[in-house]
Structures are given as C-alpha cells and as structure tokens.
Length: 217
Image (cartoon, rainbow, N blue to C red):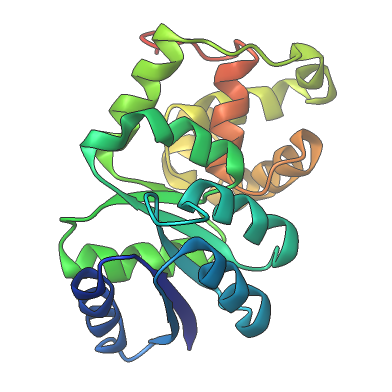
C-alpha cells in the first residue's frame, strides 16, 4: 500500500484529490493539510511515501514546505500540484527537492499513476511543465560547476545525456546497444556520483553543467 498525504488550502480540491486516490486499491491517503506547516508536520509524523503539495498556501508555502520535508522526512517524495500561471515557481520547487509536477486539471487516472511512479523512486513531469522547464533553462541559465562530470565514465556520460533527453531505460538501451538492466545500473551510479536522488534531478544537473543545452538533441 502506497501511503499519501495531500496539502491544498482549497478544501474542495484537497478532498477531491483524496477521494480519487483512496478509490485506488493500492493507494491510501493517510492525512490532509490546509497549509505548509501542517503538511510538514504530517510528513514528519506519518512518514508517507508521497506528499502531494500545492504551491500557494497561507503561511508556509509549498516551496518551503517541500524543502523542509526533504530535510526532516527524507523518505517522503513530494509531487507539486501547479497551474500554468505559476511558472515562476517551477524551477525553485525542483531545487527544493520536488520529485514531480502535475497540473491540477490532470485526469484522475494519471494522478494515481503519477503517485505510483514517484513512490517507486522515479520522477515525473507533466509534458507541458517539461516544455516550460526547458524554456527556463534557455532564457535564464544558472550554471553549475561542471567538474562533477569528470567523475563519470564515458558510458555514464552517454547514459546521462539520454536521461536528460527524456528517454526511458529501454529506449536508452536501444540507442546505446546495451540492456535496460545495464542502463538501470548506470543510472544508479550516476545518481550517486552527482549526489541527486532521481532522474529529474539528474536532468537538471545535465542542463546546469552544460552537458545538455536547450534545443540541442
């Protein structure tokens, strides 16, 4: 059973999301919060697998709450619920440690699947949010020390490049002529060397270090 908390200051939205997830046989909403402080408290006390987090909430907002959950309940992975109107917060939330972004009008089935994906240790972005993330890198690059790339082997660099382009393990295997299982092993090593916890954070590192540039395939 995947344990989930939901944080949103709009009661109708919060209760609706909880109802959608609780209807799934493998998902259980163990707590709800109307603000960031309560969301952090739930994560610390209940240790859910996934915390769904609104960005704009009274008091402690979703960005700061996400960062605190990462520090105080590191086993809980955060998925931020957002709208296109909040683009200025997307990159900040990724830096805060969010493992995914979904739009609030996401179909119920996709919402449930997203919780499963993130709980499994992977990361997820809504396609529209992905486009905006890349555009953000193009317009406001924030360089990271590229020396970390020197810790990667040639093959690991090739794998990271394909990860940053959004390919699955199976697709990367086809491109590089190796098995998906080998790709998975490489990805695990890459995450450890870069000091990040999932493919999404690795993708950010690839862009920030200049390994991948927006518009270059």
